[in-house]
Image (cartoon, rainbow, N blue to C red; front, side):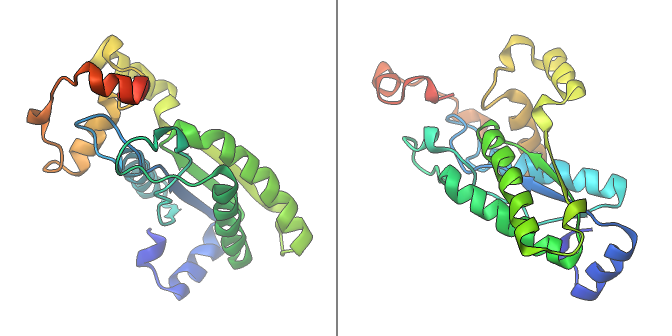
Length: 205
């Protein structure tokens, strides 16, 4: 059940049965010369929808922009400062908590979001208490980094071995290829000269 494709009465009915919601969060950043800039958000959203269908849980709109300041040397990257992302997360949860949601399950597609998400959860708990929102004591926030799940890591290593790496990995590119099969042109693989290496360092995956 997708929140943005629901009506408010449908959300109200859902809340009578469950107070949990899945929130996909990713990033808008470079993923090498062939990976899509939206890879992290695309993966988080696709996996969140799958989990939502399996568990009959509601899925919130994806937070597409995360903390990617370390990628801003690359054209197309958009980043929020950690302080800004904390405010976004806090507002997201606060609005949903006012509606009656108490269980927030963030499926994260970007390693750079982890520390900021944890800080945002702490700030949000204090914020909800200050507002004295009904059932604020029941609010719980969890983060799941899909790429760090044991079964995912094991399968990725079986399929790709040492090629898996830690960024712009074959596994996440494979997910985006599944979701948007026409968007990735594998024929564009090229070797970049030392000029690009000198300019971008090891950030270019």
